[in-house]
Image: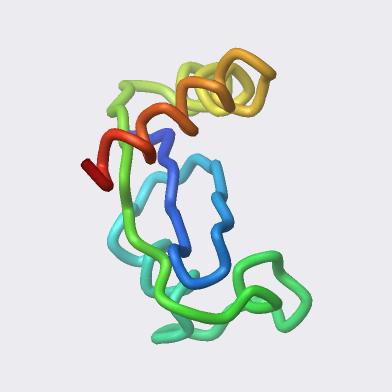
Length: 88
């Protein structure tokens, strides 16, 4: 299975949108538990990255398509509304 996901760093007010086949390992990389690229977006914006949204797909191309959709203007608006509803 493959996942499109959104993580959020409330300390820095940042979002990250991605896709992966191993969500648990990927979250550990974002949070520095496992080794990650030193110049990655999430390592430059230190703090706790929380998973706030995920969708599961059978193939990587489907997950990539959803990732691109979430990164579009409308997708980012959806994510911002999703975050606003989390804090209510």
